[in-house]
Image (cartoon, rainbow, N blue to C red):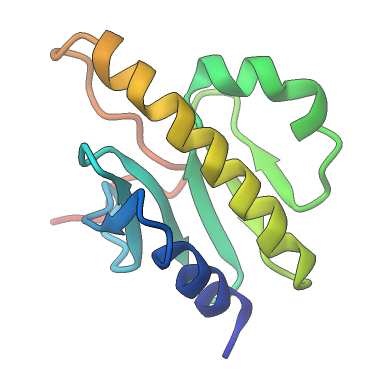
Length: 125
């Protein structure tokens, strides 16, 4: 089992996450109970976590020091490279932060705001 599969299996066991649809078309996607997309996997070595731009700004001093994390200047998503088993712990910590932030965003974001896409963008036809 590769690291993405291990991480997916670990996170799937969380009661606050359930299978859902990713905005970029990836099949392995987990959402909060309200349907907010939280994490999805690209291949065997990457996971994208939806932290939101405000949360990334708040956590930037820590996130910028993590070698496994790639930040995007225009997206509320971060990419976690899964290269060693401890990267799964980093991913789980960020997913936990995303879950805490998801409720605040879902209750404060106006309905007309377009979805925040991961760095891979939409792959749907």
